Length: 268
Picture 1 (cartoon, one colour):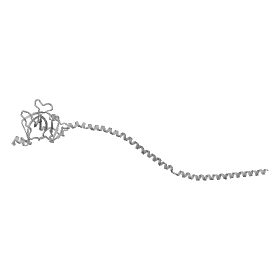
Picture 2 (cartoon, rainbow, N blue to C red; picture 1 turned 180 degrees about the vertical axis):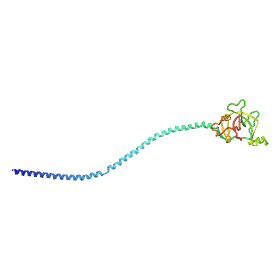
Picture 3 (cartoon, rainbow, N blue to C red; picture 1 turned 60 degrees about the vertical axis):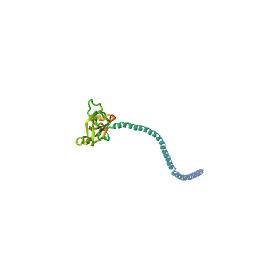
Picture 4 (cartoon, rainbow, N blue to C red; picture 1 turned 135 degrees about the vertical axis):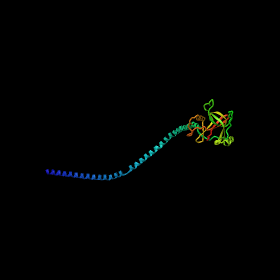
């Protein structure tokens, strides 16, 4: 009986071993099949990863951003133009006012300079000046005169006393004084001092010129300037450099009983 039990145990163990072996071989077969499947599946996954759809999408996004940036400045340009036009219009108005005031500033300068050492044509010298009358009357005409000292009473402020004599020039000088008097017509002119006459002239509204001894040019000046020069004052601004007043004679024009022109004549 004991031997029978041992045999039973041995058979039982054999059956158990057979069952264990068959389960091991089944497991191995099952593991082999999925392993192959998983290997073949990995291949397609690698192919999917290598594909480049994401790379193509990146440039598309950048292009869209670039278009948006270009559109933005186009909208800002009209906004800058609108304020610019009104500002330009406002700036023009002050410029116009300034240019209008410029002539007004220049006007006094021009009027002050007019007749103040302005070069003008020399006087028209007659062959014979107007005759001087002993009764001290002065009919209209062109007289030759030189500045003299004031009488008694002295002339009023602004007046200059002229002594009038008769002038002869060229052939008329020789005819009047005679060819034998060589000293009468030196430098082609001479004056007759018998008779003489005096005349106080207010220096105000006359046409007045002086002769520049250095250049022999005639320069128009004002009555106030001549009055100042005759009294020994220095020339005012505008006189030629080096100009000094010299007491040359004047052609004194009387028209309508008034002295209208005083033109100094340069003589050697």
